[in-house]
Each structure stands twice: as C-alpha cells, then as structure tokens.
Amino acid sequence: MSRVALVTGGSRGIGAAISKALKGAGYTVAASYAGNDEAAAKFTEETGIKTYKWDVGNYEASKAGLAQVESDLGPIDVVVANAGITRDAPFHRMTPEQWHDVVNTNLTGVFNTVHPIYPGMRERGFGRVIVISSINGQKGQFGQVNYSATKAGDLGFVKALAQEGAAKGITANAICPGYIATDMVMAVPEKVRNSIIAQIPTGRLGEPEEIARCVVFLASDDAAFLNGSTITANGGQFFV
Ligand code: CAA
Image (cartoon, rainbow, N blue to C red; front, side, top):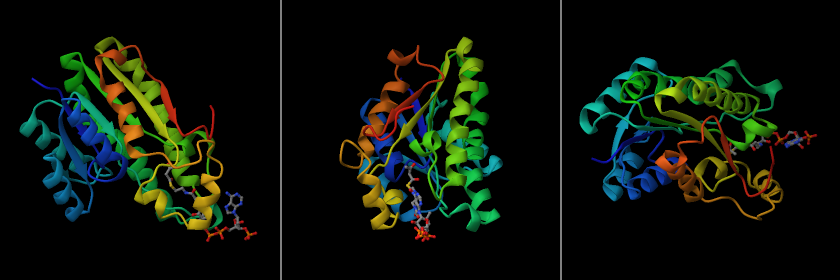
C-alpha cells in the first residue's frame, strides 16, 4: 500500500507542484486549500488529486479536515505544511490584523496541521513532517516583519520537533525556498521584483518543481537521517 501524504495549500503554487511530485513518486496525495474553489476543482480535474477545504488557522477545522482525509485515504504518513500568506507592509504601517493573519496562517497553521495527526505517527513509528519556510525567515525582508517572524518560527518548530520525534521514527525538516515563480512573488510590484531577481546569482526565479523535488527527497526512506535540518533552495541568494 502506498504511503499517504497531505499538502496544505496544495492546489496552487509551490504546493501544487509538491502534490504532483509526491503523486508521481507513488504517494496517495491529498491537498488542502483555504478559499479558491475554482482552482481546487481544476487541480483535481487535471491531476486526480483529492482536494479538501479548511482554514489551517483554525484548529478545530484542521482537526476535522485531517480526520476526513484519514478516513478517505488512510493514516497520513507525510505532512507538508506549505500553506502560507503574505500581508506585506513596512512595520510602521503594519496593522495588528496584518500581523495576526500572517502569524495565524503561517505559524499557528503549522501547529494546527501537524498536532492532530502526530499521535498516529507516534503509534505507527513513522512520520515525515516537512515545513515550507522561506529565505525571508533566514535573512529577514523589508516589508515583511510579520512574514519573516513566522518563517523563522517555522525553523524553530522543526528543530524542536525533530528531537521529540526521532525515537519514534518521525523526522521534521524545513525547506527555505528563495523567490519562486508563483502568484505570491508575481504580486510583488514589478520594480521591486526586478531588484530582487538582480540579487539572485542564478539570474532567475526558482521553479515550484525545484522545491517539490526537495520535498520528495525529505519524504523518502533515504532521508531518515536528516532530522531538524533546513534545505536552502534559493539560487545562491543567501547563505546561512
Ligand atoms: N530596503 C531598503 N529600503 C527599501 C526597501 C528595501 N528592500 N524596499 C523599499 N524601500 C524604501 C523605498 O526606497 C522607499 O523609500 P523612500 O520613501 O525614501 O523613497 C520606502 O522604503 C517605501 O517603499 P515603497 O514605495 O515600496 O513603499 P510601499 O508602502 O509602496 O510598499 C512594500 C512597501 C509593500 C513593503 C513594498 O516595498 C514591497 O512589496 N516590497 C517587497 C516585499 C517582498 O519582498 N515580499 C516578498 C513577497 S514573496 C514571498 O514572501 C515569498 C517568499 O517566501 C520569498
């Protein structure tokens, strides 16, 4: 029987590439999404990957959604906490709402995604927790005090969880994508985006599939000794 993988925010952008790559690698995949019904339906039609709607920022909704996935497909062995949002603004103009929305989705959302299914992973003695952080959690970014704080928080999350899960066969790792060609990056004003691309030694934005391949590796049995680590995939823009 194939292993079951769940990808939050898995019907668009980097998440969609991850869902498809995991399916290609033989996993039974479920993708959650928050709001875009049309994109999710199109994604399911094109890929055959089931999509489920819930808000990762809501614990009870996450718990119910995860239970539905497990009842449909079986216990989740691989969880990819990918769902994330931006609410960019310079700090002096950032509203409490912009702060809370980003913390709730990008950081609390990771807790809400992993916590309900973690006891099952412990019982079965196997699990792969993969969190999609960001280059901006490593280096910080002008206009992203909220986002950078959450993405740095994601790295602390995996480092601590890695130590707790190790004895039970559960690894927790993060990937820090740099600037990838997705709607999120394309929403950055063109002038700012071009100045960012100029800082990437590879000379281009990354492709979602380049992050997806890192996920497939971290999910595999071959990656059993990687635990608490961060894969940095940013075209040479920043070294930790
Ligand atoms: N460093 C220093 N100063 C900067 C700066 C930077 N990186 N960016 C802007 N500034 C300065 C500007 O030069 C300007 O200065 P003056 O007023 O003296 O001219 C001032 O800050 C205001 O800049 P803007 O005109 O851009 O201000 P704004 O209010 O219109 O927009 C902003 C502010 C929303 C933060 C906008 O600059 C922006 O969108 N920046 C990009 C933020 C970014 O990189 N987001 C990443 C999104 S993708 C993502 O998050 C995925 C991932 O994981 C990588």
